[in-house]
Amino acid sequence: MRSVALKMLLGDSAKYLALVFGVAFATLLMSQQVSIFIGLMTRTANQVLDVREADIWVMDPRVRYVDEVEPLPDAALGRVRSVEGVEWAAPLFKGNAIFRTRDGLINQINILGVDDETLVGAPRTWLAGDLEALRQPNSIVFDKEGATLIWPDDDPLSKVGTEAEINDRRVVVTGIANTAPSFITFPLAYARYSEAIRFTPPQRNKMSFVLVRARDGVDHEALAERIETQTGYQALTWDSFAWRSVQYYLTRTGIPVNFGITVMLGFIVGAAVTAQTFYLFVIENLRQFGALKAIGATNGQITGMVLLQAGVVGLIGYGLGMGGAAAFFTFVRGTAALEGFYLPWQVLVGTGVVVFLIILISVLGSLTKVFRVDPAIVFRG
Amino acid sequence: MSAVIARDIEMAFGSNGLKTQVLFDIDLEIASGELTMLVGPSGCGKTTLLSILSGTLKPTGGDVEVMGNVITRMKDSEKVILRRRCIGFIFQQYNLLPALTAAENAAMALVADGMPLKQAAEKARAVLETLGMGPHADKLPRMLSGGQQQRVAIARAIVHEPDLVVCDEPTAALDAETGRQVMELLKEAAAGPGRAVLVVTHDNRIYRYADRIVAMEDGRIVGDSRLGTLPEGLHAH
Image (cartoon, rainbow over all chains, first blue to last red):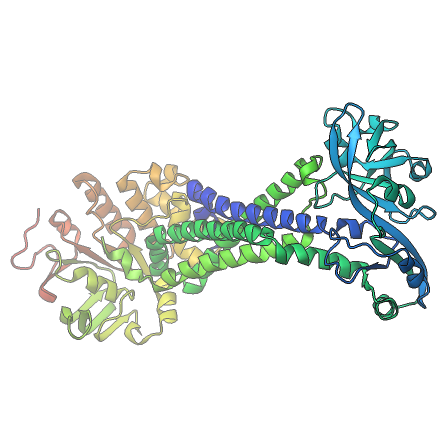
């Protein structure tokens, strides 16, 4: 009966395509939107995730996420270094400034000032120049996307050596790096800590974070607690801080709601199209199922046929939808707006489960009709 | 030998308040080796009786025995197996699966009994040959005329060599000539020693193919005649 079921399904190509399209559409919409949402939320934490040398971030107790900075006094660095279990501690500046090019164009930029000696927090992937470029006087290094935003018509790599001004101070672009894109779309620039605080307007305290590496064998959570107890500052492991930044955007912005609505619409439209088409497919074949029952097919055989038809539609639709989503992320890989977005395996699995549920709902709705169909239906004209 | 024995068959549709009795106290025996026609005006209950005799509808009263099996006391699952192995069906609207070829459609009873489609279709092809449908065995139903589709239905009804073949208005959707051809084939291929054929019809042009004619009216058997004679009040074409 399996081959009969497949022939029945494939024989009606219009309905078969509608069914596959319904599942593919639902799969594509859900997986693509969820992946973009995850990518977007990951961006809110990328500045934390990118600093892989640090185990713990120390900050003012009022800071709620990475883009909210309340500077610490310089003395904080020494106090943190004195806590038992700290291997090293380095300052990190994070702030905004106005970048003015020679031709007078201005751009608000985001500056990260990394420790002068260790350069902890500096980018690791270089497209032009190298880490030593940061050690040159008045040097500034842009991430590729930032350089593209500032000089949209030029090759960003050609901008090495370009002179410009930040707050009336001369700077020289000494390198272009590749960094994970951040949620805030200002161009991201790197400088040494001492230069960064010189480039930005004066204020009493300037140290945004203290980055800490724990000694080997020291528990990160325990060390963070010890730092908080001894210094009074807030200390979070890198993953806690990253997750806290994500949670801030999740709870304080309308982004999850908007994406949730789109994902829900994808589910509803996909489920409605699939369930309705599948239901109609079965209903229109009801007389044929009745004939099969009269001839001697059991409810179990017909259930098997419907399940096989649903399974084939589900697998092909899911495959096409997922293929579409994968193709989308491959296609947009090079675009700045969607840089770093990808299709996580968890989304593949999650969407598969949801599609399975859609198919199951469709099948259950149809099977009740098939079970109830009276084989004597075939004797009614 | 009787292929079908029906005793005191009663059938009513609807619930207590709106109950409609459609069959009253029917007693009938269908002999093997005979083509029996169940005739009567529309709405007299002949199709309902056919459904009951073939085990696709449960009567509200009475017993039906098919090839020695009391189907009215069988579980649904047992009736399915009996239908699959002992009964062949020919429907007014053919009820062929549009996505299957003529040979595959004709093979359905064998496939339902577990034979692989390809093997069953080969067997069905041989039956189609005997019905003059060999050249059309690989065609889809939409490529066949009504008469050809009904021949495929005949092949489907006899491919598993059942003891009883039930036909519901087999010529109702066909013109006179095609109807005549179909009945001749049915008489030739389906009827035979050890097999009973029960045809429900109100097409008086085909009465001459019957070995026995049972007439119904208002849910009751009102006449029973054999070998070309018609019950009182019926007229052959």
